[in-house]
Every structure is written in structure tokens, then in C-alpha cells.
Amino acid sequence: MKPIQLISPVDGSVYAERTPLTRAEADAVVGRARAAQKAWAGRPLADRISLVKAGVARLNEMKDPVVEEIAWQMGRPTRFGGEFGGVNARTEYMSEIAAKTLAPLMIEETNSFRRYLAREPLGVVFIVAPWNYPYLTTINTLVPALIAGNAVVLKHASQTMLVGERLAEAFHAAGIPEDVFQNVVLDHATTEALIAARSFGFVNFTGSVGGGQAIERAAAGTFTPLGLELGGKDPGYVRADANVDAAIDTLMDGAMYNAGQCCCGIERIYVHERHYDRFVEGAVAWASGLKLGNPFDAATTLGPMANKRFAATVRNQIAEAVAAGAKPLIDPKLFPADDGGAYLAPQVLVNVDHSMKVMMEESFGPVVGIMKVKDDEEAIRLMNDSPYGLTASIWTNDYDVAAGIGARIETGTIFMNRADYLDPALCWTGCKDTGRGGSLSYLGFHSVTRPKSYHLKQV
Ligand code: NAP
Image 1 (cartoon, rainbow, N blue to C red):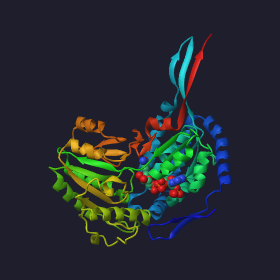
Image 2 (cartoon, rainbow, N blue to C red; image 1 turned 135 degrees about the vertical axis):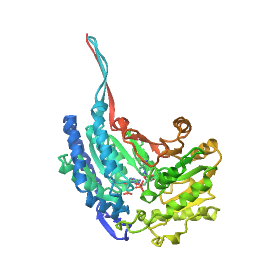
Image 3 (cartoon, rainbow, N blue to C red; image 1 turned 90 degrees about the horizontal axis):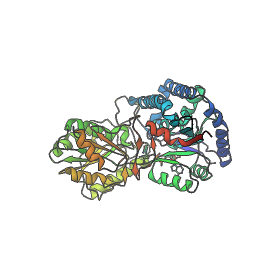
């Protein structure tokens, strides 16, 4: 098999190289996972929880190399310290609710009947992970899947292939059997062939719409349950009653953090005409304050994009919008580190409309378009005018107004006065091209288990 190379966005060097498994080797991995799963599921829940927590604790001990490797692999500045806050909070919450969520639901227990709903693990869970939040996106499925008694096979993104190795190292060191959690390097053809051969009890795919479609096609006819957590084009809406300064701060951070490479990053902003000028001025000032540069420099707040081909997509979207009449408000010369490649200056665009790709297609980069709206109706229409539905961020201080607008928006999560955040107690889900399924919350356990009904009668 041809080796897969990981090209670092920091300096364009080959940072790692791994040879993907052959089909026969991959089949052997699945066979070992299946064989190991039964014994794993047979262990007490409390053991599985403590082993998973110990695995995450081991990962925390590797913080320094992990943070450095993330920077080399996908360019995130080291000052942000990795993804440990979210990894730990999600692990903690899912561990805490596991016993209650996985316990059988007793419907009747009398002298005549015992009727209850149990939940069973699905067998071997296959995680196909993206590079943008390489630990968090994996943990979302890995933790509940193992706790619920599944074995897990992880195929990480080529851009962050060392992440799978780190997770396996940490979890094995904590005592999780090697065959219960296996990290593999696979090419697309073998990934799809394994799914098509019904190798897995559940597949969680987090990534692009095109990738999700390929996974769905591979699974067609196998009845394999799929969790498809795909792209987004998330809107922010600043109402007339908004706290504008707070909106600028949170929405611009949501647009630019991680160089805009967040599935739930803010990609388009609609501002009530009363606040439009002030908001735009504040947004430009906010973005101008970013420091683009080498992710190992402590002053850097905006690293390179993960790959120069991702930056090229964003550059093309900006150029196309400007050619169609959009006005760029940031002068790229203010960002001398912009090299025309992976290092890309932030951009704020006005005079944009929905005929432009930058307002309709996922940019996944440090650019945001801002439009003026006259009322809720116009904002709701524009927010819904999208192929995606992951999150929407509404700025008001009225819970009822936010919930009322939220009820009319086709999306997975409604935020009021926050953005770009995952709450482990709430389900992470989407609609339209953002895919289907759900992770985190008690529903996250439902994704990695199936119901089994017990209807027991005395005669
Ligand atoms: P991607 O190119 O679709 O890749 C995601 C993963 O799928 C990688 O491991 C990739 O492997 C694999 N893959 C892609 N196409 C495949 C195919 N045809 N067959 C088998 N495997 C395939 O996405 P990405 O660029 O890594 O991630 C960015 C995307 O993920 C964005 O669209 C973002 O919005 C989305 N995302 C969504 C969420 C969410 O919660 N909804 C969270 C994070 C990211 P290789 O790396 O080896 O190509």
C-alpha cells in the first residue's frame, strides 16, 4: 500500500508518514475487535467507566507533546493548550450519566409480568474522525461507545493521524485491552469496503458532506446505523435588543477561533439595522487585533489553516464575492504573515448576499460575511436559506423571543448569547446537509446502543 503523508501546515514539511492497512489486515482488526467485545461488555459498568476515565487521565499526562503535535499537524496555536477542557468535561459528564442512561427501564414488575426495555451495545463501533478538533470529535463517540460495552476501531484523518496513536497509547496504558480499542490507518477504499461488508455495528463519521455521502453509499443495504456529523454554515443574528459589545466579542471569536475551522463556527452574521454600523466597526477592530503567525509563537492567536488547499478554497470564495460586489474590510497587508498559502489573513466582508458562495457554502476558514436586516422575519428567512443546519446564535436577552425564533429555524442547536460551544448535557446534532444522528447527552448513549425489549410472563 502507498504510504499516507501528513504535510504540516506550519512549514510544509512531511511531519509523519504511515502505511495504510491492506484489506486483509483491516479484516483481521475487525475480527479481533469482535472477539474482544463480548468479554468487554461482560465486565461491570463501573469497571468500564473507571478504565475509560483512567485512559483520559493518561492522555492528560501527555499534554505537552499532545499540544505540540496538534500545532504541527493542523496549525492550532499552542497558547490554546489543546482540547483538554472539553475532553475532560465530556468524559466526566458521560461517565456520570452512564448508569442511569444504560439501566433497563422497568415498565411492569408484578406477580404476572416483568416487562422492561434494556439497552445493548452494538458490537464494534467504527469512528471516522476529522482533523479540525481531532480529540474532541473522537472523544464524543469513543467514550460512550466504550462505556456502553462496544469495541472501537478508530480511523483518524490523515492530517491528524498521530491523534489516534496518542489515544490508543493512553487508553492501553490505562488498561483497556488492545483489541477493545484499535487505532488504524486506512485509505478511503478500504474504509468504504469494510463498511460495505457489514463489519460494524455502528459507524460514526464526522467530516465533510461529500465524505458523509460516500459513507452512506458504502453502507447502503447493510442496515448499519450511521451517525453523520457533517458541515455547517452557522448564522449569528444580532437583534435590536442585543448587547452589541458581547455579540461582537462572541460572534467574532466564533468566526475566527481555530482559523475558522470549527463545524459550528460562525460563518454569516445578520445584524439589525439599528446596530449594523457599530457592529461592523467592532467586528473589523476585533479581527484586526488577531495575530497571524507561527503556532509555536506565544503571541499567535491565528495559526495557519490545516492545509494550504483549505486556505485556497477560502481565498477563492473571498475573491469571487469581491468580484461580485462584496467589500473586504480588512487589508491583508496588515497581516504580513499571510503567505498566499496556508497562512491566511482574517477577512470581514460586507455588501454580501446569498448569491455568493461565501454566504452559502461552508468556508471553514477565517472569513465572515455581515448583512443588515430590518426585523426577525428577514433574519429568520436568511438563516433558513442554507443547505446546512448545525447551530444558530441569537442575540437578545429575552428567553421567549430566542426560543420563539429558534422554533422556526431549521438547525440542531439554538444558542442565545453564545456560540461555537458544545454542552455535554445537550445533544450534538444537525439537520439538512449537516447530517443526522446525535452525540453527547443521554441520547449519545442511544446512538451506541440498541433497545432490547423483555416481555416476561408468568403462567
Ligand atoms: P473529510 O475530508 O470528510 O474527512 C473526515 C474523515 O473522513 C477523515 O478521516 C477522512 O480521511 C475520512 N474520509 C473522507 N472521505 C472519505 C471517503 N470517501 N471514504 C472514507 N473515508 C473518508 O472532512 P475533514 O476535512 O477532515 O473535516 C472537516 C469537515 O468536518 C467540515 O465540513 C466540518 O464542518 C466537519 N465537521 C463536522 C462536525 C460536526 O459535529 N457536525 C464536527 C467537526 C467537523 P482522510 O483524512 O484520510 O481523507
